[in-house]
Length: 300
Ligand code: ATP
Image (cartoon, rainbow, N blue to C red; front, side, top):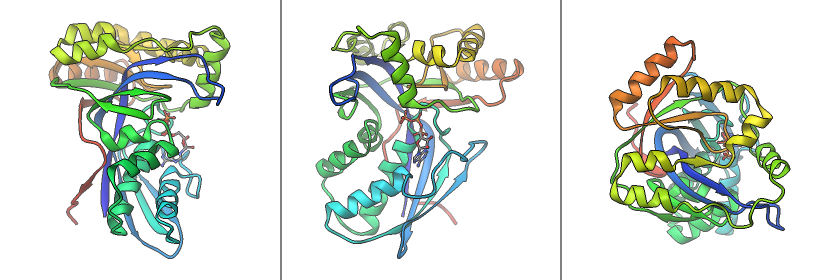
Protein backbone atom coordinates (compact mmCIF):
# COMPACT_ATOMS: atom_id res chain seq x y z
CA UNK A 1 0.00 0.00 0.00
CA UNK A 2 1.73 3.18 -1.17
CA UNK A 3 0.50 6.65 -0.28
CA UNK A 4 1.88 9.88 -1.69
CA UNK A 5 1.87 13.12 0.32
CA UNK A 6 2.90 16.57 -0.80
CA UNK A 7 5.09 19.32 0.63
CA UNK A 8 3.35 22.50 1.79
CA UNK A 9 4.14 26.15 1.45
CA UNK A 10 2.52 28.93 3.48
CA UNK A 11 1.22 31.78 1.32
CA UNK A 12 0.89 33.79 4.48
CA UNK A 13 2.05 32.85 7.96
CA UNK A 14 0.91 35.13 10.76
CA UNK A 15 2.16 34.14 14.22
CA UNK A 16 0.76 35.54 17.48
CA UNK A 17 2.29 35.68 20.97
CA UNK A 18 3.10 32.29 22.48
CA UNK A 19 0.16 30.73 24.35
CA UNK A 20 0.16 29.39 27.91
CA UNK A 21 0.51 25.84 26.47
CA UNK A 22 3.75 26.86 24.73
CA UNK A 23 2.19 26.80 21.24
CA UNK A 24 1.85 29.83 18.96
CA UNK A 25 -1.49 30.90 17.50
CA UNK A 26 -1.31 30.93 13.70
CA UNK A 27 -3.33 32.48 10.93
CA UNK A 28 -2.06 30.88 7.76
CA UNK A 29 -2.94 29.78 4.25
CA UNK A 30 -1.36 26.48 3.24
CA UNK A 31 -0.89 25.25 -0.30
CA UNK A 32 0.16 21.69 -1.21
CA UNK A 33 2.83 21.72 -3.95
CA UNK A 34 4.21 19.06 -6.28
CA UNK A 35 7.18 17.83 -4.25
CA UNK A 36 6.34 14.44 -2.78
CA UNK A 37 7.21 11.73 -0.30
CA UNK A 38 5.87 8.23 -0.95
CA UNK A 39 5.24 5.99 2.06
CA UNK A 40 4.85 2.24 1.43
CA UNK A 41 3.31 0.24 4.27
CA UNK A 42 3.72 -3.53 4.53
CA UNK A 43 2.98 -6.12 7.21
CA UNK A 44 5.65 -6.69 9.87
CA UNK A 45 5.83 -8.08 13.43
CA UNK A 46 7.67 -4.99 14.66
CA UNK A 47 7.94 -1.35 13.67
CA UNK A 48 10.55 -0.86 10.97
CA UNK A 49 11.29 2.21 8.91
CA UNK A 50 13.63 2.78 5.97
CA UNK A 51 14.21 6.01 4.08
CA UNK A 52 15.48 6.39 0.53
CA UNK A 53 16.46 9.67 -1.03
CA UNK A 54 14.74 10.83 -4.22
CA UNK A 55 17.03 13.08 -6.25
CA UNK A 56 19.41 14.95 -4.01
CA UNK A 57 17.47 15.00 -0.72
CA UNK A 58 19.79 14.49 2.27
CA UNK A 59 17.98 12.00 4.52
CA UNK A 60 20.67 11.79 7.21
CA UNK A 61 18.54 13.78 9.70
CA UNK A 62 15.54 11.47 9.44
CA UNK A 63 15.10 9.22 12.50
CA UNK A 64 14.83 5.48 11.75
CA UNK A 65 13.22 4.59 15.05
CA UNK A 66 10.11 5.63 16.95
CA UNK A 67 11.19 9.25 16.61
CA UNK A 68 10.03 9.05 13.00
CA UNK A 69 6.72 10.86 12.68
CA UNK A 70 5.39 8.18 10.30
CA UNK A 71 5.94 5.46 12.93
CA UNK A 72 4.32 7.64 15.59
CA UNK A 73 1.35 8.06 13.26
CA UNK A 74 1.06 4.28 12.86
CA UNK A 75 1.28 3.70 16.60
CA UNK A 76 -1.37 6.33 17.27
CA UNK A 77 -3.70 4.81 14.67
CA UNK A 78 -3.27 1.32 16.17
CA UNK A 79 -3.90 2.65 19.71
CA UNK A 80 -6.99 4.55 18.51
CA UNK A 81 -8.48 1.21 17.40
CA UNK A 82 -7.21 -0.65 20.48
CA UNK A 83 -4.93 -2.80 18.29
CA UNK A 84 -1.49 -4.18 19.07
CA UNK A 85 -0.06 -4.00 15.54
CA UNK A 86 3.14 -2.94 13.82
CA UNK A 87 4.23 -2.47 10.21
CA UNK A 88 7.17 -1.73 7.98
CA UNK A 89 7.26 1.76 6.43
CA UNK A 90 9.46 2.51 3.42
CA UNK A 91 9.71 6.24 2.74
CA UNK A 92 10.90 7.61 -0.61
CA UNK A 93 11.81 11.17 0.29
CA UNK A 94 11.53 13.89 -2.32
CA UNK A 95 10.75 16.64 0.23
CA UNK A 96 13.87 18.31 1.67
CA UNK A 97 14.31 17.50 5.39
CA UNK A 98 13.97 20.27 8.02
CA UNK A 99 13.34 22.71 5.18
CA UNK A 100 10.10 24.35 6.28
CA UNK A 101 8.17 22.22 3.78
CA UNK A 102 6.58 19.90 6.38
CA UNK A 103 8.07 16.66 5.03
CA UNK A 104 7.75 14.87 8.36
CA UNK A 105 4.09 15.90 8.56
CA UNK A 106 3.54 14.61 5.00
CA UNK A 107 4.98 11.23 6.03
CA UNK A 108 2.74 11.10 9.10
CA UNK A 109 -0.35 11.82 7.00
CA UNK A 110 0.71 9.26 4.38
CA UNK A 111 1.31 6.63 7.07
CA UNK A 112 -2.16 7.23 8.55
CA UNK A 113 -3.82 6.70 5.16
CA UNK A 114 -1.61 3.75 4.14
CA UNK A 115 -2.03 1.85 7.42
CA UNK A 116 -5.75 2.57 7.58
CA UNK A 117 -6.01 0.80 4.19
CA UNK A 118 -3.51 -1.97 4.93
CA UNK A 119 -5.26 -2.86 8.19
CA UNK A 120 -8.73 -2.28 6.67
CA UNK A 121 -9.79 -0.01 9.54
CA UNK A 122 -12.08 2.41 7.66
CA UNK A 123 -11.29 5.22 10.10
CA UNK A 124 -13.62 8.19 9.54
CA UNK A 125 -12.18 11.36 8.00
CA UNK A 126 -13.05 13.19 11.19
CA UNK A 127 -11.07 10.74 13.35
CA UNK A 128 -8.12 10.80 10.91
CA UNK A 129 -8.02 14.61 11.12
CA UNK A 130 -8.18 14.36 14.90
CA UNK A 131 -5.28 11.89 15.07
CA UNK A 132 -3.37 14.06 12.60
CA UNK A 133 -3.76 17.14 14.82
CA UNK A 134 -2.32 15.18 17.75
CA UNK A 135 0.76 14.31 15.68
CA UNK A 136 1.59 17.87 14.67
CA UNK A 137 0.15 21.22 13.59
CA UNK A 138 0.81 20.66 9.86
CA UNK A 139 -0.41 17.04 9.67
CA UNK A 140 -4.15 17.73 9.18
CA UNK A 141 -3.32 19.91 6.18
CA UNK A 142 -1.10 17.15 4.73
CA UNK A 143 -4.18 14.90 4.74
CA UNK A 144 -6.36 17.56 3.14
CA UNK A 145 -4.04 19.06 0.49
CA UNK A 146 -5.18 21.71 -1.98
CA UNK A 147 -5.25 25.19 -0.49
CA UNK A 148 -6.57 25.70 3.02
CA UNK A 149 -6.86 28.23 5.78
CA UNK A 150 -5.14 27.20 9.02
CA UNK A 151 -6.10 28.50 12.46
CA UNK A 152 -5.50 27.48 16.08
CA UNK A 153 -1.86 26.33 16.07
CA UNK A 154 -2.33 25.49 12.37
CA UNK A 155 -4.27 22.27 12.94
CA UNK A 156 -7.77 23.71 12.33
CA UNK A 157 -7.94 23.52 8.55
CA UNK A 158 -10.67 24.72 6.20
CA UNK A 159 -10.38 24.25 2.42
CA UNK A 160 -10.48 27.52 0.47
CA UNK A 161 -11.47 28.22 -3.12
CA UNK A 162 -8.36 28.43 -5.29
CA UNK A 163 -8.85 28.29 -9.04
CA UNK A 164 -5.29 29.45 -9.66
CA UNK A 165 -2.53 27.54 -11.31
CA UNK A 166 0.44 28.68 -9.21
CA UNK A 167 4.10 28.03 -9.96
CA UNK A 168 6.82 28.10 -7.35
CA UNK A 169 10.58 28.24 -7.52
CA UNK A 170 11.80 26.24 -4.51
CA UNK A 171 15.37 26.83 -3.35
CA UNK A 172 16.35 24.35 -0.61
CA UNK A 173 19.33 24.89 1.68
CA UNK A 174 21.74 22.09 2.49
CA UNK A 175 21.60 22.73 6.27
CA UNK A 176 18.13 22.50 7.87
CA UNK A 177 16.69 24.85 10.49
CA UNK A 178 14.99 23.75 13.71
CA UNK A 179 11.36 24.91 13.79
CA UNK A 180 11.30 25.32 17.63
CA UNK A 181 14.50 27.39 17.47
CA UNK A 182 12.93 29.77 14.92
CA UNK A 183 9.79 30.21 17.06
CA UNK A 184 12.05 30.80 20.09
CA UNK A 185 13.90 33.53 18.21
CA UNK A 186 10.57 35.12 17.21
CA UNK A 187 9.60 35.27 20.92
CA UNK A 188 12.99 36.81 21.76
CA UNK A 189 12.72 39.45 19.00
CA UNK A 190 9.03 40.26 19.60
CA UNK A 191 8.09 39.60 23.23
CA UNK A 192 5.13 42.00 22.84
CA UNK A 193 3.68 40.42 19.69
CA UNK A 194 -0.13 40.69 19.62
CA UNK A 195 -1.99 37.64 20.91
CA UNK A 196 -4.03 37.52 17.68
CA UNK A 197 -1.88 36.84 14.60
CA UNK A 198 -1.95 38.99 11.47
CA UNK A 199 -4.97 38.12 9.33
CA UNK A 200 -4.69 36.14 6.11
CA UNK A 201 -7.68 37.99 4.64
CA UNK A 202 -5.76 39.66 1.78
CA UNK A 203 -4.41 36.30 0.53
CA UNK A 204 -7.85 34.67 0.77
CA UNK A 205 -9.43 37.55 -1.16
CA UNK A 206 -6.78 37.35 -3.91
CA UNK A 207 -7.24 33.57 -4.23
CA UNK A 208 -11.00 33.94 -4.45
CA UNK A 209 -10.82 36.16 -7.53
CA UNK A 210 -7.65 34.61 -8.95
CA UNK A 211 -5.71 37.88 -8.85
CA UNK A 212 -2.05 36.85 -9.21
CA UNK A 213 -0.64 40.35 -8.62
CA UNK A 214 -2.71 40.88 -5.46
CA UNK A 215 -1.69 37.44 -4.23
CA UNK A 216 1.98 38.27 -4.75
CA UNK A 217 1.60 41.54 -2.86
CA UNK A 218 -0.10 39.78 0.08
CA UNK A 219 2.47 36.98 0.60
CA UNK A 220 4.06 37.29 4.04
CA UNK A 221 5.88 35.17 6.59
CA UNK A 222 6.33 36.31 10.22
CA UNK A 223 9.07 33.67 10.67
CA UNK A 224 11.32 35.21 8.00
CA UNK A 225 12.99 37.78 10.31
CA UNK A 226 13.70 35.35 13.15
CA UNK A 227 15.05 32.73 10.73
CA UNK A 228 17.42 35.31 9.21
CA UNK A 229 18.39 36.50 12.68
CA UNK A 230 19.39 32.91 13.58
CA UNK A 231 21.09 32.26 10.26
CA UNK A 232 22.32 35.57 8.74
CA UNK A 233 23.48 33.94 5.46
CA UNK A 234 19.79 33.23 4.79
CA UNK A 235 19.41 36.97 4.25
CA UNK A 236 22.01 36.70 1.49
CA UNK A 237 20.18 33.73 -0.01
CA UNK A 238 16.90 35.67 -0.02
CA UNK A 239 18.64 38.65 -1.65
CA UNK A 240 20.20 36.39 -4.30
CA UNK A 241 16.84 34.85 -5.19
CA UNK A 242 15.23 38.33 -5.27
CA UNK A 243 17.91 39.57 -7.65
CA UNK A 244 17.17 36.73 -10.12
CA UNK A 245 13.40 36.47 -9.74
CA UNK A 246 11.00 38.99 -11.19
CA UNK A 247 8.26 38.38 -8.61
CA UNK A 248 7.57 37.89 -4.90
CA UNK A 249 10.10 35.95 -2.81
CA UNK A 250 9.65 34.68 0.75
CA UNK A 251 10.84 32.10 3.24
CA UNK A 252 8.96 28.79 3.37
CA UNK A 253 7.53 28.14 6.86
CA UNK A 254 10.35 28.17 9.40
CA UNK A 255 12.92 27.94 6.60
CA UNK A 256 15.57 27.67 5.36
CA UNK A 257 13.91 26.92 1.97
CA UNK A 258 13.31 30.09 -0.09
CA UNK A 259 10.31 30.40 -2.45
CA UNK A 260 9.58 32.54 -5.48
CA UNK A 261 6.04 32.80 -6.90
CA UNK A 262 5.62 32.77 -10.67
CA UNK A 263 2.56 33.26 -12.89
CA UNK A 264 3.65 30.57 -15.38
CA UNK A 265 5.85 27.49 -15.68
CA UNK A 266 8.09 29.32 -18.18
CA UNK A 267 8.59 32.21 -15.77
CA UNK A 268 9.58 29.86 -12.93
CA UNK A 269 11.89 27.89 -15.21
CA UNK A 270 13.66 31.09 -16.28
CA UNK A 271 14.35 31.93 -12.61
CA UNK A 272 15.57 28.39 -12.04
CA UNK A 273 18.01 28.70 -14.95
CA UNK A 274 19.33 32.04 -13.68
CA UNK A 275 19.84 30.70 -10.15
CA UNK A 276 21.63 27.57 -11.34
CA UNK A 277 23.89 29.78 -13.45
CA UNK A 278 24.55 31.94 -10.37
CA UNK A 279 25.88 28.83 -8.61
CA UNK A 280 22.86 27.72 -6.54
CA UNK A 281 23.20 23.91 -6.60
CA UNK A 282 19.55 22.79 -6.34
CA UNK A 283 16.42 24.61 -7.54
CA UNK A 284 13.01 22.96 -8.03
CA UNK A 285 10.06 24.22 -10.05
CA UNK A 286 6.75 22.99 -8.61
CA UNK A 287 3.08 23.72 -9.00
CA UNK A 288 0.15 24.01 -6.60
CA UNK A 289 -2.43 23.31 -5.43
CA UNK A 290 -2.10 19.51 -5.57
CA UNK A 291 -3.91 16.70 -3.70
CA UNK A 292 -3.39 15.70 -0.09
CA UNK A 293 -2.27 12.20 1.01
CA UNK A 294 -3.62 9.68 -1.51
CA UNK A 295 -3.10 6.08 -2.54
CA UNK A 296 -0.95 5.61 -5.63
CA UNK A 297 -0.38 2.60 -7.85
CA UNK A 298 3.31 2.34 -8.72
CA UNK A 299 4.54 0.27 -11.64
CA UNK A 300 7.03 -2.45 -10.70
P1 ATP B 1 7.95 21.60 10.19
O1 ATP B 1 6.80 20.67 9.87
O2 ATP B 1 8.25 21.68 11.66
O3 ATP B 1 7.94 22.89 9.45
P2 ATP B 1 10.15 20.99 8.51
O4 ATP B 1 9.40 20.94 7.25
O5 ATP B 1 11.04 22.16 8.73
O6 ATP B 1 9.20 20.81 9.73
P3 ATP B 1 10.71 18.16 8.53
O7 ATP B 1 11.31 17.68 7.26
O8 ATP B 1 9.30 17.83 8.82
O9 ATP B 1 11.00 19.72 8.66
O10 ATP B 1 11.64 17.61 9.70
C1 ATP B 1 11.82 18.21 10.95
C2 ATP B 1 12.52 17.21 11.87
O11 ATP B 1 11.61 16.15 12.18
C3 ATP B 1 13.72 16.51 11.22
O12 ATP B 1 14.90 17.21 11.50
C4 ATP B 1 13.71 15.12 11.85
O13 ATP B 1 14.57 15.08 12.96
C5 ATP B 1 12.30 14.92 12.36
N1 ATP B 1 11.53 13.86 11.65
C6 ATP B 1 10.77 12.90 12.21
N2 ATP B 1 10.18 12.12 11.30
C7 ATP B 1 10.54 12.59 10.10
C8 ATP B 1 10.23 12.19 8.77
N3 ATP B 1 9.44 11.14 8.49
N4 ATP B 1 10.75 12.92 7.77
C9 ATP B 1 11.55 13.99 8.04
N5 ATP B 1 11.89 14.38 9.29
C10 ATP B 1 11.39 13.71 10.31
